[in-house]
Image (cartoon, one colour):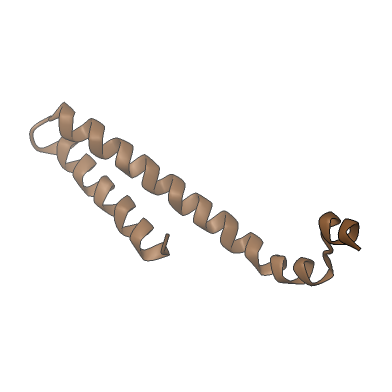
Length: 73
């Protein structure tokens, strides 16, 4: 999932959650978009985690030999 789509999802959920809390307290808009804001935040956390981890992933793949490849020989 692209970073910008995850960020837009999170910001959209935050905007609608704020709207539901401020103007007319609407529980239906609050719950659905609150869950959307939380899931967008989790997506951003996962994106950051795997983005940071992906920098070291290239070095490990070059030296890694799978057990099935060794067993096939």
